[in-house]
Structure formats: structure tokens, C-alpha cells
Length: 259
Image (cartoon, rainbow, N blue to C red):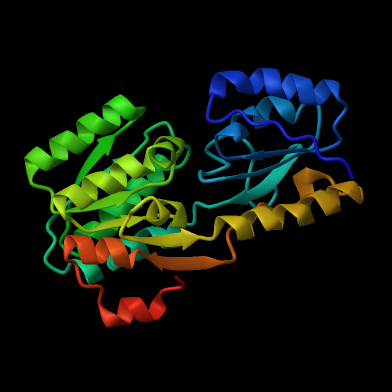
């Protein structure tokens, strides 16, 4: 098997040209990850596609349904609705006195509307008031963070999307400066200095893609292969950040931590 790798480095304008290059090379299967999955609708007209990204593949138009993709693409998604409420519960556990929570999210991310609705419902049940701020780039992100500081937010929640991933260090640094607890959706945010994350293990998700490729190579249509959700969910705690901002992590949360 030959692998031809191309990297857009979050430059979505370069994706079409990279796709054309790969198709001209005669690839048999296209694998797209993260923001690069934007090429899925165009690519699947020419070649089978296997994807992995943080949004809702149905809302994105990549597949017709999770169980029966129905078109020339399949893969996995990090967006598990049951994790939404658990992140709110985790925030309440580490910050029982929190009242006003900043939510940083991109309105352009497929599935964002449903994720926001479910987050709001879970927050209401636990007595948290959400200040949802849409961000589309670094400028709008920094404006939202500045507004949150002036508005007296005492906690933070972050959704997974290309904007927050690219600017995860800025978001984590902001929470540390304000000394407020923040819950993130993936390990990468904690590596950048975030306090705690609860979500899928991305390397495990990438490893899952090999099985999709194997089945397609054996002649199975991507449209007949169900889209999968993460099988490895992890809690990651950045103890250095916890000590720096003076937030003690409850023992029951520490006991659940994978790292």
C-alpha cells in the first residue's frame, strides 16, 4: 500500500488544489481528517472517502445517516451527544460555586446548534448561566474572551471546532490569567495549558480508520459501512494548571482521570 500525504495546515483555501493533486495521482481511497473533511462532498464523486472529524457528518452533508451513509463516504465522528451533559457535570464538580460560564464555539461547525441546545439544557439543570459567544477566527475569539473578562464569567466551556483547536493555547492562557476553571473537549487543549478535558482519544479514532479502508479495499461500498463514534473516552487533568490557578481537583474526579 502506498500512502500519499498532503497537508493544508488549516488553510482551507488550499484544499481544492490538494484534492486535485491526489485525484490526478490516481488514489484509490481518500482519507480526510479535521478541517480537511470539507473536501468530502466533492471528493466522494470521484473516489471512496474515509473521514474523521469533530462535527456531525449528517449536518455537514457528508452522509445521509450514521447507520446508512448512503453515499461514497464513511468514517467516524467525535461528536457524541452524551458527552455534552457530562462535560457540564464535570465543570460543576470542579467548580461547585460557578454561576456564569463562557461558552466558546464556532457557529459554522456542523452540529454546533444541537450541541449548544443540549449544553444549555444540561447547564440549566445544574444552575449554570451560559454566556455563549460565537467565534469564527482569532479576532472574534479574542473579542469574546475580552468581553467575558469584563462580564465577570467565573468558568469556561469550550466546544471542539477548527477555530478553538487552532487557538487552544490562547483560550487556555485566558482561563489561567483569570484563574477560572475551564473544561475542554479533548486532550490537546490540556496539553496547551487547559485545566481539564473530557472527550475522545484522537489517536484511537485515527486508528479506527484502517478498518474502514480495509473493508473498502475488500469491495464493500462506503455507503453501506456505518459511521462510528469514539470507543475510547478519556478524562485528562493538567495538575500544573490546577496548582497555578489554585483550583483543587476533587478526589472523585482525580480517580476517574486517565492522565
